[in-house]
Image (cartoon, rainbow, N blue to C red):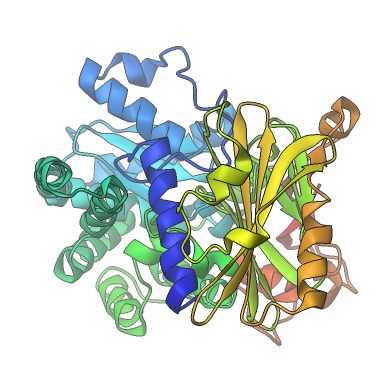
Length: 491
Protein backbone atom coordinates (compact mmCIF):
# COMPACT_ATOMS: atom_id res chain seq x y z
CA UNK A 1 0.00 0.00 0.00
CA UNK A 2 2.13 2.93 -1.22
CA UNK A 3 1.90 6.66 -0.56
CA UNK A 4 -0.60 8.22 1.81
CA UNK A 5 -2.18 4.94 2.86
CA UNK A 6 1.16 3.49 3.91
CA UNK A 7 2.01 6.61 5.93
CA UNK A 8 -1.40 6.75 7.56
CA UNK A 9 -1.44 3.09 8.51
CA UNK A 10 2.15 3.37 9.73
CA UNK A 11 0.92 5.95 12.23
CA UNK A 12 -1.80 3.51 13.33
CA UNK A 13 0.85 0.80 13.72
CA UNK A 14 3.05 3.17 15.70
CA UNK A 15 0.26 3.88 18.17
CA UNK A 16 -0.50 0.17 18.46
CA UNK A 17 3.18 -0.49 19.20
CA UNK A 18 3.12 2.26 21.83
CA UNK A 19 -0.05 0.95 23.45
CA UNK A 20 0.93 -2.70 23.43
CA UNK A 21 4.55 -2.21 24.49
CA UNK A 22 7.56 -2.93 22.30
CA UNK A 23 8.82 -6.45 22.96
CA UNK A 24 12.13 -8.07 22.15
CA UNK A 25 11.00 -10.03 19.10
CA UNK A 26 7.51 -8.71 18.40
CA UNK A 27 4.74 -6.56 19.83
CA UNK A 28 1.76 -8.02 21.64
CA UNK A 29 -0.72 -5.39 20.53
CA UNK A 30 -3.80 -5.11 18.34
CA UNK A 31 -6.55 -7.67 18.61
CA UNK A 32 -5.07 -9.93 21.26
CA UNK A 33 -7.02 -11.45 24.13
CA UNK A 34 -5.67 -9.66 27.19
CA UNK A 35 -6.35 -12.67 29.41
CA UNK A 36 -4.28 -14.93 27.15
CA UNK A 37 -1.11 -12.93 27.76
CA UNK A 38 -1.38 -12.98 31.56
CA UNK A 39 1.60 -14.68 33.28
CA UNK A 40 1.07 -18.37 33.92
CA UNK A 41 2.53 -20.39 36.82
CA UNK A 42 6.27 -21.04 36.33
CA UNK A 43 7.18 -24.21 34.47
CA UNK A 44 10.27 -26.30 35.18
CA UNK A 45 12.00 -24.38 32.42
CA UNK A 46 11.14 -21.00 33.94
CA UNK A 47 12.29 -22.13 37.38
CA UNK A 48 15.78 -22.73 35.97
CA UNK A 49 16.05 -19.13 34.72
CA UNK A 50 17.13 -16.04 36.59
CA UNK A 51 14.36 -13.56 37.48
CA UNK A 52 15.38 -11.30 34.58
CA UNK A 53 15.50 -14.22 32.13
CA UNK A 54 12.16 -15.50 33.37
CA UNK A 55 10.56 -12.09 32.85
CA UNK A 56 11.92 -11.86 29.31
CA UNK A 57 10.78 -15.43 28.63
CA UNK A 58 7.24 -14.59 29.77
CA UNK A 59 7.13 -11.44 27.64
CA UNK A 60 8.47 -13.25 24.60
CA UNK A 61 6.07 -16.17 24.95
CA UNK A 62 3.13 -13.77 25.41
CA UNK A 63 4.11 -11.93 22.22
CA UNK A 64 3.73 -15.21 20.30
CA UNK A 65 0.29 -16.08 21.66
CA UNK A 66 1.49 -18.05 24.68
CA UNK A 67 2.94 -21.54 24.95
CA UNK A 68 1.37 -24.43 23.03
CA UNK A 69 0.74 -27.35 25.34
CA UNK A 70 1.14 -30.75 23.68
CA UNK A 71 3.10 -33.23 25.83
CA UNK A 72 3.54 -35.76 23.01
CA UNK A 73 4.90 -33.17 20.59
CA UNK A 74 7.04 -31.61 23.32
CA UNK A 75 8.61 -35.01 24.04
CA UNK A 76 9.23 -35.55 20.32
CA UNK A 77 11.08 -32.24 19.94
CA UNK A 78 13.08 -32.73 23.13
CA UNK A 79 14.16 -36.15 21.88
CA UNK A 80 15.49 -34.59 18.66
CA UNK A 81 17.25 -31.84 20.64
CA UNK A 82 18.89 -34.41 22.94
CA UNK A 83 20.35 -36.25 19.93
CA UNK A 84 21.57 -33.00 18.38
CA UNK A 85 23.23 -31.75 21.57
CA UNK A 86 25.10 -35.03 22.00
CA UNK A 87 26.44 -34.72 18.43
CA UNK A 88 27.28 -31.02 18.66
CA UNK A 89 30.51 -29.21 19.35
CA UNK A 90 29.12 -28.27 22.78
CA UNK A 91 27.55 -31.40 24.33
CA UNK A 92 27.77 -29.68 27.72
CA UNK A 93 25.05 -27.14 26.79
CA UNK A 94 21.49 -27.66 27.94
CA UNK A 95 18.49 -26.40 25.96
CA UNK A 96 14.97 -25.76 27.27
CA UNK A 97 12.32 -26.11 24.57
CA UNK A 98 9.15 -24.01 24.33
CA UNK A 99 6.54 -24.53 21.61
CA UNK A 100 4.97 -21.16 20.77
CA UNK A 101 1.25 -20.97 20.00
CA UNK A 102 1.72 -18.98 16.81
CA UNK A 103 1.01 -19.69 13.12
CA UNK A 104 4.15 -17.73 12.20
CA UNK A 105 7.01 -19.82 10.84
CA UNK A 106 9.77 -19.15 13.34
CA UNK A 107 12.43 -20.68 15.59
CA UNK A 108 15.19 -19.08 17.63
CA UNK A 109 17.57 -19.84 20.48
CA UNK A 110 18.81 -17.46 23.18
CA UNK A 111 22.29 -17.59 24.76
CA UNK A 112 20.79 -18.86 28.04
CA UNK A 113 19.73 -22.10 26.33
CA UNK A 114 16.10 -21.17 25.73
CA UNK A 115 15.01 -22.74 22.42
CA UNK A 116 11.72 -21.68 20.84
CA UNK A 117 9.81 -23.11 17.88
CA UNK A 118 6.36 -22.10 16.65
CA UNK A 119 3.62 -24.54 15.73
CA UNK A 120 3.57 -22.76 12.34
CA UNK A 121 7.08 -24.00 11.65
CA UNK A 122 6.28 -27.47 12.97
CA UNK A 123 3.35 -27.73 10.55
CA UNK A 124 5.62 -26.89 7.62
CA UNK A 125 8.21 -29.60 8.36
CA UNK A 126 7.52 -33.11 7.06
CA UNK A 127 9.90 -35.30 9.05
CA UNK A 128 12.36 -35.36 11.94
CA UNK A 129 15.33 -34.55 9.73
CA UNK A 130 13.72 -31.30 8.56
CA UNK A 131 12.89 -30.36 12.14
CA UNK A 132 16.45 -31.30 13.17
CA UNK A 133 17.88 -29.03 10.47
CA UNK A 134 16.06 -26.01 11.93
CA UNK A 135 16.89 -26.81 15.56
CA UNK A 136 20.54 -27.53 14.73
CA UNK A 137 20.76 -24.25 12.82
CA UNK A 138 19.49 -22.29 15.83
CA UNK A 139 21.76 -24.20 18.21
CA UNK A 140 24.66 -23.36 15.88
CA UNK A 141 24.00 -19.65 16.41
CA UNK A 142 24.49 -20.23 20.14
CA UNK A 143 27.57 -22.43 19.67
CA UNK A 144 29.17 -19.85 17.33
CA UNK A 145 28.31 -17.07 19.82
CA UNK A 146 26.11 -15.29 17.28
CA UNK A 147 23.20 -15.14 19.71
CA UNK A 148 25.29 -13.54 22.45
CA UNK A 149 26.58 -10.92 19.99
CA UNK A 150 23.02 -10.15 18.92
CA UNK A 151 21.94 -9.85 22.56
CA UNK A 152 24.65 -7.21 23.10
CA UNK A 153 23.33 -5.36 20.06
CA UNK A 154 19.81 -5.54 21.53
CA UNK A 155 21.05 -3.86 24.71
CA UNK A 156 22.61 -1.10 22.61
CA UNK A 157 19.27 -0.67 20.79
CA UNK A 158 17.51 -0.16 24.12
CA UNK A 159 20.07 2.51 25.04
CA UNK A 160 19.57 4.21 21.66
CA UNK A 161 15.79 4.12 22.18
CA UNK A 162 16.14 6.09 25.41
CA UNK A 163 18.05 8.77 23.54
CA UNK A 164 15.35 8.78 20.85
CA UNK A 165 12.59 9.16 23.42
CA UNK A 166 14.47 12.07 25.02
CA UNK A 167 15.03 14.07 21.82
CA UNK A 168 12.13 13.11 19.53
CA UNK A 169 8.93 15.00 20.28
CA UNK A 170 6.73 12.52 18.38
CA UNK A 171 6.61 9.53 20.74
CA UNK A 172 4.99 7.43 17.99
CA UNK A 173 8.02 7.87 15.73
CA UNK A 174 10.33 7.02 18.60
CA UNK A 175 8.46 3.80 19.36
CA UNK A 176 8.31 2.83 15.71
CA UNK A 177 12.02 3.53 15.26
CA UNK A 178 12.82 1.26 18.19
CA UNK A 179 10.57 -1.48 16.83
CA UNK A 180 12.28 -1.33 13.45
CA UNK A 181 15.76 -1.32 14.96
CA UNK A 182 14.95 -4.45 16.94
CA UNK A 183 13.61 -6.15 13.83
CA UNK A 184 16.84 -5.41 11.97
CA UNK A 185 18.88 -6.69 14.90
CA UNK A 186 16.73 -9.84 15.06
CA UNK A 187 18.30 -10.94 11.79
CA UNK A 188 21.77 -12.41 11.65
CA UNK A 189 24.27 -11.39 8.99
CA UNK A 190 24.60 -13.39 5.78
CA UNK A 191 27.94 -14.77 6.94
CA UNK A 192 26.48 -15.83 10.29
CA UNK A 193 23.55 -17.55 8.60
CA UNK A 194 25.82 -19.52 6.25
CA UNK A 195 28.09 -20.46 9.15
CA UNK A 196 25.08 -21.65 11.16
CA UNK A 197 23.90 -23.64 8.13
CA UNK A 198 27.25 -25.41 7.84
CA UNK A 199 27.49 -26.14 11.57
CA UNK A 200 23.85 -27.24 11.70
CA UNK A 201 24.13 -29.66 8.79
CA UNK A 202 27.15 -31.26 10.45
CA UNK A 203 25.33 -31.62 13.78
CA UNK A 204 22.27 -33.18 12.10
CA UNK A 205 24.38 -35.65 10.15
CA UNK A 206 26.45 -36.74 13.16
CA UNK A 207 23.20 -37.20 15.10
CA UNK A 208 22.10 -39.70 12.44
CA UNK A 209 19.56 -37.47 10.66
CA UNK A 210 19.37 -36.97 6.91
CA UNK A 211 21.55 -33.89 6.28
CA UNK A 212 19.51 -33.13 3.15
CA UNK A 213 16.60 -32.24 5.44
CA UNK A 214 17.95 -28.68 5.52
CA UNK A 215 17.71 -28.39 1.72
CA UNK A 216 14.16 -29.78 1.68
CA UNK A 217 12.97 -27.45 4.44
CA UNK A 218 14.60 -24.39 2.89
CA UNK A 219 12.92 -25.26 -0.41
CA UNK A 220 9.57 -25.59 1.33
CA UNK A 221 10.14 -22.25 3.04
CA UNK A 222 10.95 -20.64 -0.29
CA UNK A 223 7.70 -21.94 -1.78
CA UNK A 224 5.76 -20.83 1.30
CA UNK A 225 7.28 -17.35 1.03
CA UNK A 226 6.31 -17.25 -2.64
CA UNK A 227 2.71 -18.05 -1.80
CA UNK A 228 2.68 -15.48 1.01
CA UNK A 229 4.07 -12.77 -1.28
CA UNK A 230 0.74 -12.71 -3.11
CA UNK A 231 -1.30 -12.57 0.12
CA UNK A 232 -1.97 -9.95 2.77
CA UNK A 233 1.02 -11.19 4.78
CA UNK A 234 3.17 -8.65 3.02
CA UNK A 235 1.05 -5.90 4.51
CA UNK A 236 1.77 -7.04 8.06
CA UNK A 237 3.41 -4.71 10.51
CA UNK A 238 7.21 -4.50 10.13
CA UNK A 239 7.78 -5.35 13.78
CA UNK A 240 6.72 -9.01 13.63
CA UNK A 241 9.57 -10.88 11.90
CA UNK A 242 9.40 -14.59 11.26
CA UNK A 243 11.80 -17.32 10.09
CA UNK A 244 10.86 -16.65 6.45
CA UNK A 245 11.99 -13.01 6.65
CA UNK A 246 15.03 -13.45 8.89
CA UNK A 247 16.21 -16.69 7.18
CA UNK A 248 15.58 -16.08 3.46
CA UNK A 249 15.71 -19.35 1.50
CA UNK A 250 17.56 -18.04 -1.55
CA UNK A 251 18.65 -20.39 -4.36
CA UNK A 252 22.27 -19.64 -3.44
CA UNK A 253 21.72 -20.63 0.17
CA UNK A 254 19.91 -23.82 -0.83
CA UNK A 255 22.76 -24.83 -3.15
CA UNK A 256 25.33 -24.18 -0.40
CA UNK A 257 23.35 -26.30 2.05
CA UNK A 258 23.25 -29.08 -0.56
CA UNK A 259 27.03 -28.88 -0.89
CA UNK A 260 27.36 -29.03 2.90
CA UNK A 261 25.17 -32.14 3.03
CA UNK A 262 27.27 -33.92 0.39
CA UNK A 263 30.28 -33.67 2.70
CA UNK A 264 28.50 -36.00 5.16
CA UNK A 265 26.33 -38.33 3.06
CA UNK A 266 25.49 -39.23 -0.51
CA UNK A 267 21.92 -38.58 -1.67
CA UNK A 268 21.26 -42.35 -2.05
CA UNK A 269 22.30 -43.04 1.60
CA UNK A 270 21.19 -39.89 3.40
CA UNK A 271 20.34 -40.97 6.95
CA UNK A 272 17.17 -41.04 9.06
CA UNK A 273 14.07 -39.03 8.25
CA UNK A 274 11.60 -40.62 10.70
CA UNK A 275 8.66 -39.33 8.67
CA UNK A 276 5.99 -41.56 10.26
CA UNK A 277 7.15 -40.76 13.76
CA UNK A 278 7.11 -37.04 13.07
CA UNK A 279 3.71 -37.06 11.37
CA UNK A 280 2.25 -39.00 14.29
CA UNK A 281 3.53 -36.31 16.66
CA UNK A 282 1.99 -33.39 14.71
CA UNK A 283 -1.30 -35.11 13.88
CA UNK A 284 -3.99 -32.83 15.34
CA UNK A 285 -1.69 -29.79 15.61
CA UNK A 286 -3.64 -26.51 15.52
CA UNK A 287 -3.11 -24.90 12.11
CA UNK A 288 -3.33 -21.19 11.38
CA UNK A 289 -5.00 -18.80 13.78
CA UNK A 290 -5.87 -20.04 17.24
CA UNK A 291 -9.55 -19.16 17.85
CA UNK A 292 -8.71 -17.64 21.24
CA UNK A 293 -6.62 -15.03 19.39
CA UNK A 294 -9.25 -14.46 16.72
CA UNK A 295 -9.39 -16.14 13.33
CA UNK A 296 -10.41 -15.65 9.73
CA UNK A 297 -12.91 -17.76 7.82
CA UNK A 298 -13.35 -16.41 4.33
CA UNK A 299 -14.44 -12.76 4.59
CA UNK A 300 -15.37 -13.10 8.26
CA UNK A 301 -13.21 -12.31 11.27
CA UNK A 302 -14.33 -13.92 14.50
CA UNK A 303 -12.93 -13.37 18.00
CA UNK A 304 -14.76 -15.60 20.48
CA UNK A 305 -12.75 -14.46 23.52
CA UNK A 306 -13.19 -10.76 22.89
CA UNK A 307 -16.75 -11.51 21.82
CA UNK A 308 -17.23 -9.87 18.42
CA UNK A 309 -17.33 -10.67 14.73
CA UNK A 310 -17.03 -8.66 11.52
CA UNK A 311 -17.49 -9.47 7.81
CA UNK A 312 -15.45 -7.73 5.10
CA UNK A 313 -16.96 -6.51 1.81
CA UNK A 314 -17.34 -8.85 -1.15
CA UNK A 315 -14.06 -9.67 -2.90
CA UNK A 316 -11.84 -8.99 0.14
CA UNK A 317 -9.22 -11.35 1.57
CA UNK A 318 -8.49 -11.04 5.29
CA UNK A 319 -5.48 -11.83 7.43
CA UNK A 320 -5.17 -11.69 11.22
CA UNK A 321 -1.79 -10.29 12.29
CA UNK A 322 -0.34 -9.51 15.72
CA UNK A 323 -1.16 -5.84 15.22
CA UNK A 324 -4.47 -5.80 13.37
CA UNK A 325 -6.81 -7.51 10.97
CA UNK A 326 -5.75 -6.53 7.45
CA UNK A 327 -7.70 -6.90 4.25
CA UNK A 328 -7.39 -6.19 0.54
CA UNK A 329 -9.62 -6.54 -2.48
CA UNK A 330 -8.65 -8.79 -5.37
CA UNK A 331 -8.00 -5.70 -7.50
CA UNK A 332 -5.63 -4.21 -4.94
CA UNK A 333 -7.46 -0.91 -5.20
CA UNK A 334 -9.26 -1.25 -1.85
CA UNK A 335 -7.98 -2.22 1.60
CA UNK A 336 -9.02 -2.28 5.24
CA UNK A 337 -7.54 -2.35 8.71
CA UNK A 338 -9.26 -3.24 12.01
CA UNK A 339 -7.41 -2.60 15.27
CA UNK A 340 -8.12 -1.65 18.88
CA UNK A 341 -7.09 1.36 20.96
CA UNK A 342 -7.95 2.87 24.31
CA UNK A 343 -9.94 6.11 24.18
CA UNK A 344 -11.00 7.96 27.32
CA UNK A 345 -14.61 7.23 28.17
CA UNK A 346 -15.45 10.92 28.39
CA UNK A 347 -14.13 11.66 24.88
CA UNK A 348 -16.72 11.45 22.14
CA UNK A 349 -15.87 9.19 19.22
CA UNK A 350 -16.70 11.97 16.78
CA UNK A 351 -14.12 14.16 18.48
CA UNK A 352 -11.64 11.26 18.46
CA UNK A 353 -11.98 10.89 14.66
CA UNK A 354 -11.27 14.59 14.31
CA UNK A 355 -8.27 14.55 16.66
CA UNK A 356 -5.63 14.10 13.97
CA UNK A 357 -4.53 10.45 14.35
CA UNK A 358 -5.13 10.17 10.62
CA UNK A 359 -4.52 13.02 8.20
CA UNK A 360 -6.95 14.69 5.84
CA UNK A 361 -10.19 14.19 7.80
CA UNK A 362 -13.09 16.11 6.27
CA UNK A 363 -14.74 17.60 9.36
CA UNK A 364 -18.07 18.01 7.56
CA UNK A 365 -18.30 14.21 7.15
CA UNK A 366 -17.88 13.38 10.86
CA UNK A 367 -21.04 11.65 12.04
CA UNK A 368 -22.10 9.97 15.29
CA UNK A 369 -24.16 6.78 15.00
CA UNK A 370 -25.00 3.47 16.66
CA UNK A 371 -23.90 0.13 15.17
CA UNK A 372 -25.76 -2.90 16.52
CA UNK A 373 -26.23 -1.15 19.85
CA UNK A 374 -22.64 0.17 20.13
CA UNK A 375 -21.75 3.87 20.16
CA UNK A 376 -19.81 4.71 17.00
CA UNK A 377 -18.68 7.49 14.73
CA UNK A 378 -17.62 7.67 11.12
CA UNK A 379 -15.83 10.13 8.85
CA UNK A 380 -14.11 10.44 5.49
CA UNK A 381 -10.45 11.36 5.02
CA UNK A 382 -8.76 12.07 1.69
CA UNK A 383 -5.17 12.06 0.51
CA UNK A 384 -3.37 12.42 -2.79
CA UNK A 385 -3.71 8.75 -3.78
CA UNK A 386 -6.16 7.19 -1.31
CA UNK A 387 -9.47 8.07 0.32
CA UNK A 388 -10.69 6.58 3.59
CA UNK A 389 -13.99 5.72 5.22
CA UNK A 390 -13.22 5.41 8.94
CA UNK A 391 -15.27 4.04 11.83
CA UNK A 392 -14.61 4.14 15.57
CA UNK A 393 -16.74 1.68 17.54
CA UNK A 394 -16.81 1.57 21.34
CA UNK A 395 -16.98 -2.06 22.47
CA UNK A 396 -16.37 -2.74 26.15
CA UNK A 397 -13.31 -0.87 27.38
CA UNK A 398 -11.79 -0.57 23.90
CA UNK A 399 -12.50 1.38 20.74
CA UNK A 400 -12.19 -0.56 17.50
CA UNK A 401 -10.97 1.39 14.50
CA UNK A 402 -12.23 0.11 11.17
CA UNK A 403 -10.49 1.89 8.30
CA UNK A 404 -11.49 1.30 4.68
CA UNK A 405 -9.24 2.68 1.94
CA UNK A 406 -9.95 3.09 -1.76
CA UNK A 407 -8.12 4.60 -4.69
CA UNK A 408 -11.43 6.19 -5.68
CA UNK A 409 -14.14 6.32 -3.00
CA UNK A 410 -17.25 6.04 -5.15
CA UNK A 411 -20.74 6.20 -3.62
CA UNK A 412 -21.15 2.50 -4.39
CA UNK A 413 -17.91 1.59 -2.58
CA UNK A 414 -18.83 3.84 0.32
CA UNK A 415 -22.18 2.05 0.67
CA UNK A 416 -20.37 -1.28 0.69
CA UNK A 417 -17.98 -0.06 3.40
CA UNK A 418 -20.88 1.13 5.53
CA UNK A 419 -22.69 -2.19 5.10
CA UNK A 420 -19.53 -4.04 6.15
CA UNK A 421 -19.17 -1.85 9.26
CA UNK A 422 -22.76 -2.73 10.17
CA UNK A 423 -21.76 -6.41 10.42
CA UNK A 424 -19.63 -5.63 13.52
CA UNK A 425 -21.60 -7.27 16.32
CA UNK A 426 -21.36 -9.16 19.58
CA UNK A 427 -21.18 -12.97 19.35
CA UNK A 428 -23.33 -15.20 21.50
CA UNK A 429 -21.98 -17.67 24.05
CA UNK A 430 -23.30 -20.50 21.87
CA UNK A 431 -21.41 -19.19 18.83
CA UNK A 432 -18.19 -18.88 20.82
CA UNK A 433 -18.56 -22.38 22.29
CA UNK A 434 -19.01 -23.92 18.82
CA UNK A 435 -15.79 -22.47 17.42
CA UNK A 436 -13.27 -25.11 16.44
CA UNK A 437 -9.72 -24.45 15.20
CA UNK A 438 -8.35 -25.89 11.99
CA UNK A 439 -5.87 -28.69 12.57
CA UNK A 440 -3.32 -30.73 10.67
CA UNK A 441 -4.76 -34.17 10.01
CA UNK A 442 -2.57 -37.03 8.79
CA UNK A 443 -4.33 -39.24 6.23
CA UNK A 444 -3.27 -42.35 4.35
CA UNK A 445 -3.47 -42.26 0.55
CA UNK A 446 -5.68 -44.84 -1.13
CA UNK A 447 -5.28 -46.38 -4.57
CA UNK A 448 -7.30 -43.68 -6.33
CA UNK A 449 -6.12 -40.71 -4.32
CA UNK A 450 -4.37 -37.83 -6.07
CA UNK A 451 -3.01 -34.53 -4.77
CA UNK A 452 -6.08 -32.83 -6.20
CA UNK A 453 -8.42 -35.23 -4.43
CA UNK A 454 -6.78 -34.87 -1.02
CA UNK A 455 -6.50 -31.10 -1.48
CA UNK A 456 -10.26 -30.94 -2.09
CA UNK A 457 -10.75 -32.21 1.48
CA UNK A 458 -8.82 -29.27 2.90
CA UNK A 459 -10.92 -26.71 4.76
CA UNK A 460 -9.06 -23.65 3.48
CA UNK A 461 -10.39 -20.59 1.71
CA UNK A 462 -8.02 -20.50 -1.26
CA UNK A 463 -5.06 -22.20 -2.94
CA UNK A 464 -5.96 -25.62 -1.53
CA UNK A 465 -3.81 -27.60 -3.99
CA UNK A 466 -0.83 -25.26 -3.60
CA UNK A 467 -1.06 -25.46 0.19
CA UNK A 468 -1.33 -29.26 0.08
CA UNK A 469 1.75 -29.57 -2.13
CA UNK A 470 3.83 -27.20 0.02
CA UNK A 471 2.76 -28.86 3.28
CA UNK A 472 3.85 -32.25 1.96
CA UNK A 473 6.98 -31.26 0.04
CA UNK A 474 5.43 -32.21 -3.30
CA UNK A 475 5.60 -30.63 -6.74
CA UNK A 476 2.90 -30.30 -9.35
CA UNK A 477 2.65 -33.54 -11.30
CA UNK A 478 3.89 -35.70 -8.42
CA UNK A 479 1.88 -38.84 -7.70
CA UNK A 480 0.90 -39.99 -4.25
CA UNK A 481 2.28 -43.25 -2.88
CA UNK A 482 -0.36 -45.82 -2.02
CA UNK A 483 -0.38 -46.34 1.74
CA UNK A 484 1.82 -43.27 2.35
CA UNK A 485 0.79 -40.60 4.85
CA UNK A 486 0.10 -36.96 4.00
CA UNK A 487 -0.94 -33.79 5.82
CA UNK A 488 -4.24 -32.04 5.15
CA UNK A 489 -5.97 -29.14 6.92
CA UNK A 490 -9.36 -29.85 8.50
CA UNK A 491 -11.34 -29.28 11.70
